[in-house]
Amino acid sequence: MEWSDVRIFLAVARTGTLGAAARLLHLSHPTVGRRLRALEEATGQMLFQRTTDGFVLTEEGTAILPLAEQMEDSALTMARQLDGKQRTLDGTLRVSSADWFGAYVLPPVVAEYSREYPRVDIEVLTGTRLFDLAQREADVAFRIVPFEGLDIVQKRLLRMRYGAYVAIAGTDPVEGDGTGSRLIAMDTSTGAFPDIDWLKKCFPNASVVLQSNNRNVQAQMCARGIGIAVLPRPVGDQNSAIRRLDLGDDPPHRDIWVGYHRDLRRLQRLRAFVDLATAHLANASFDASRP
Image (tube, rainbow, N blue to C red; front, side, top):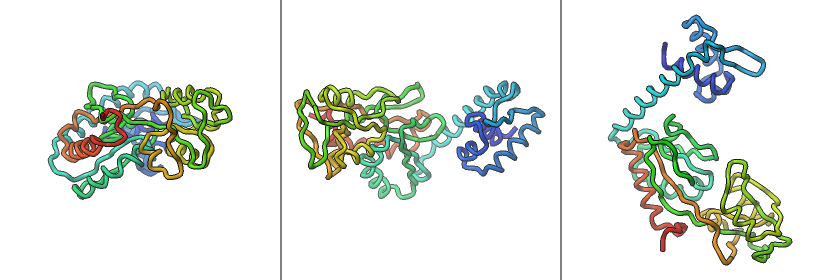
């Protein structure tokens, strides 16, 4: 049984359709279907039940799923350890972060890195989803929460300042009241946000007019005069259409963590990127840990 066919089995099991599995593996739909049929013929077992809702594991498929995952873990470990021994500064480096961090904090880091190491191809992956470092979905990640798992090497880079912003032509709200003001909040379905709680406490009589899970969207809505937004300082301070409110207290800070899998700790292109990012952010004006 070939590992490439096991990857297809796992992708179909996780996504439930041939199309989704094909997109995940960057293969064509017919290729995934053909190789899955070949795998079932080779094993002599029907691994999936074809239903109107997609592909569902049969008893035989469910039985081999843990074995396939073990095979995947071994293959990924082998790949990470081989990559981790590379000493040359070339290849591809996948960097993941939140949308706003990738748009407002990483550009100068990536620009200098590209000048210094032109043979490294950089992929910047942004979004709310936490990319899996063990699965090599990303090589290095920046997050506002610590990483989980003993296999992750991590450190706190800085304490990110936040601020409350309003459109340039907007009126200053009354702190402790907020009557007549409108707030732009975070979609809290994915978790709690101390800065949003702080915003609502500052303006208890204001109404929440809009929610979004994207800080860039919040900044643009704020610039249009829709409401008051709490934003990371790099986002708010670089937007000329909004201004930071001078309030008694600042919003709560958030720690920024960088992490990568321990098997890649000697990967030179990764180490060079982490060192450069650390140096860039060490004296950043938006770091609340600086005196």
